[in-house]
Amino acid sequence: MNVRNRGNESVKKPQSTPSVVKENVPQKKKKKKQHFHFDLWFYLTLENWILDFGRPIVMIVLPLEWFPLNMPSAGDYFHMAYNVITPFLLLKLIERSPRALPRSAVYGCIIFFVMGASIHLVGDSINHRLLLSGYQLHLSVRENPIIKDLKPASLIDSFELLYFYDEQLGHLMWYIPFFIILFIYFTGCFTETEEKKKVPVTGWLLLGPSALYYWYLVTEGQITELFLLTVLAMIAMVIHQRRKGLGPDSNGRFLLCSFGVTLVLMALWVFYLWSDPVLRNKYPGLLYMPEPWSYYTLHVKNNH
Image (cartoon, rainbow, N blue to C red):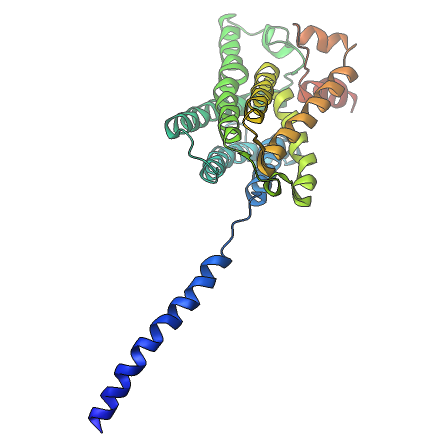
């Protein structure tokens, strides 16, 4: 009996091997990645609207008694969360690029992004405290009633230094790496496959909120030149890749269309405020682009 059982086992063992192999083959074939990164684009848009655009709103809405002037406000905590979540999502976006991208450039941009956003966090926090004390965004630092009468006068220089860190250095170190990362990602979004070039319905639905946020980012951040250079670089990349027979895939097309709609919104914004004398004086120069919050303090807040 033992001999027969051993003989049966030896016969059955080789029959189980091919069946296991056959079962594994179709499982590997079923694995297929969704080409359009709806989850990442959705998370980026959502957290940008909540943590960046919603940051000054939550500071206005919530009672001042909850967040004393000598302590961080709710908006500051939103900014801290933004400084962590956004670079993480950008790194995840780079990871999903169909081709290898320069890691040193990406890591360097992320480092500068976090540093610039952190500088802006401090400056913007103090700037909001000034708003609660009567500071008017549509006026320069020295023209503000609560600033120009400070004694000693050297204090005004300190506030101008704060404005420089908040609105200039902080913005540049924040937004330049941000758009460089998006452009680096865009350079890997080219394909010959027509199927991969189609943006799904979910992408078109996300296009409006995404473009509207970029409009806010460009106007409030005063980075019109940087944004225009990024768009021109993307168009040049499209022309260069078309000579090779390649076109933007669904993710690259989504990013390009978002920036295109942003340009239209920027043009409408400038047209609407073209003849505003106060904002014209606050934002001189060739590229006139008023900040939405300056418009708010001038035409909305003062009228209520």
